[in-house]
Image 1: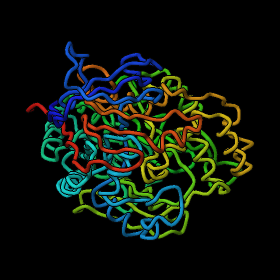
Image 2: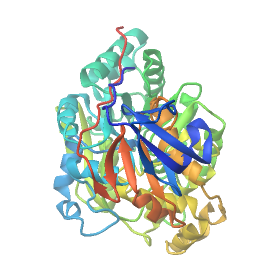
Image 3: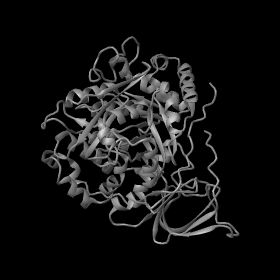
Image 4: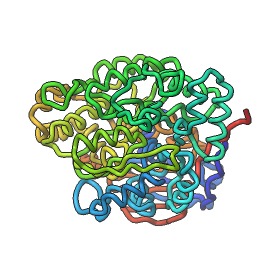
Length: 510
């Protein structure tokens, strides 16, 4: 793994701040942070030449890392076109459901985020996505490549030549300058392109024209990614996204991957009980899933939390988007990338009094509040699918303030209020735990040892917050944000538009 050197910036020291830095074991510790050349350094023997910045009484955390987002490429641009009324920021929880690439960088930075990964780029679209991301201000960025959408990779994954599969994945990552391998609905496009709906197969249905099942494809992809030594394990969006009863598919996915390193994407969308969209059957399937997850340390996840408001759904699982379109009556765009892979895009409005939406909101929070190890969880809304990333401060308050959560619960659909386990979950995330799921854990899961921490040698990605009992207000407006030692935002205003770095994995020759 090769990372570019950080931008060199003047020397300075942040003095008197209260650190929340889980990776180094500091929780509420008052300490100084010394910065030189874009990295955090040891206190110098001679501090002359270091500019002093007094941050006494304020909270210091590493820069935020969004492990799973959608910010560039054809699907995002189609989302901007399909819902221009949302891009104008008229309603909902975000100023723009799918902000421009320029606004994306500024909005993330002013929230205290310094790194973002786009989680679904078809290899055929990688060059276009990189050209767009080159215009992203401030943030370090990387992409996950939908390698299994390519016919040669899928055929190799359906075969038994492990070396061939590894070579093809290595070539895809190298030529696409990717950070990780993503699989969306394993084998699903093979069904969908042949006219079968995405809800007509499970992990053990033989793929059309191939002598393998989606389960075998998943297992072989995970093994190949591990053999390549990529920094991030296989990033898995399993089958049957958004369908009633799909908790069984997620459980079988976890069972197949247990013993291998793998990351489970937006699990909220895969945790539904029932078999139909009615009040008596649709509900939460989280309990058996979280029981399995809590006892299998090789697995990590991001939640994909739904928050109420208007947004745009976009998924590399075009079959799932088609199902949502049929269920809601909302037209979709089915974007095909040179016949190699496709995405479904459609506007969506999440409402508190809509049964399914209320369940989705409660199911995501149930995941957060019942997983025992926050180091294996990354905070996300699967931007923009569950909500725009600008809603993250509200999500942090929902996790860290039980009274606020109870108040929100009281306003949703009565069936969900009475049936969801959420009412009995009183857990409150501490500042240290919020720091873990938004910074330290995403850095560890993604394979970024120099990020998500404030130890000596780390990138000087640093956020200074004003302490506030209202966590949403606290996390919405950092006092200062530094990326690579450069002051990029202050009190909600950008201070630099300097582009960040591309994070691409170095793959050994096969």
